[in-house]
Length: 112
Image (cartoon, rainbow, N blue to C red; front, side):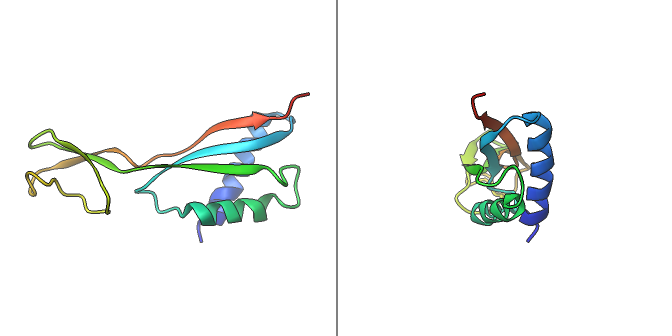
């Protein structure tokens, strides 16, 4: 369950950027090719923050589908399964266009 260590790192980042202000919501973007289970991440977030000033802060996860581009034909396609293969030219080289993201995209801070 590496989500627990990810959440510990996220807490440090949130604290640094919140600069002592109260946080309401943390938004993250996770690509489908990342081996992170969003539900587990949310659960671990609640565990890691429960005895801190971030207790009760909501973690909202945006999933980003995996998208590839074929070097052979230039076709882009969104993957429904983690199979990196062009439907047109199965032996071509592929580039992952999106789906490898893991970002904290924003913090909603409480009004002072």
